[in-house]
Image (cartoon, rainbow, N blue to C red; front, side, top):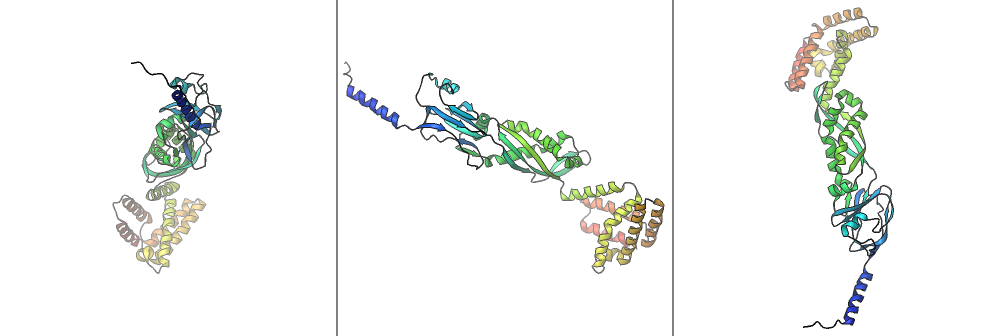
Length: 366
């Protein structure tokens, strides 16, 4: 059976309908993104069934980059500038679609804009003390906090690894991940710097540089570059800080027994005075009484005067007077109290046990 003749009216009607469909299409002439200041890292241009006019304009502002994605593949990346979109400016996309260079029809492709400006004042900190090895103390638990700034350096990598096909990707969605990276690498940075804790606290810039260097390859894996990092504070937990303060005090007096007594007595006098001022209660009232407190105050004045004058010969009579005033050698009592303090700091003695032993020893000075 032979096919019937082609109806020219039907053919013309199909051409007219195709032309009307083409005319009804919405074409995009300008693609651009003006950031609204809400901290957005990536933003997809809303297509909604529209097509990009061949010969249209792409505007990429300073601190931005644009990425064309066709059928799941990144086709082209554009830096700051104004571009006329033709098959010549999209060579990779042209290859993927096998377009002819003279092809003039509109095309459709997902377009993502990326903010490459610095994201500043990003906070980091240690919610709990972290333990590190230390040259001076063997091991310490420290706290630290500061801030850092970063930006997108490789939008293609950031798109494939982080933001994906989302309509927008805000800065807040990345904060937890980056903060975790910082905390995870603090110990490595301290070890790499080779600084003991005391030098670390005094050279926070050096610590920050070591931490930024340690973080750089981790940020690069997701298309980011870390621009700056600051360490605003490095500290020990309160109980360790007290021990460090005692060690620093001992280091100041060295092996000079006279200065050692001056240091220990100066630490004890405020507590004695407080007890005496409260009607004889507390350490002064229970252990020594007001008279012993006054005697120690006189000894302190004599020892301080001897220390200022630098005369060891003048300090000896003062020490003898102290021994006569309180009945036993003060250095023996102080040495025992120091050992008890170490046992308390290690948890071997409770605070109540320490206070009872301390009162007992101080009574012997009377």
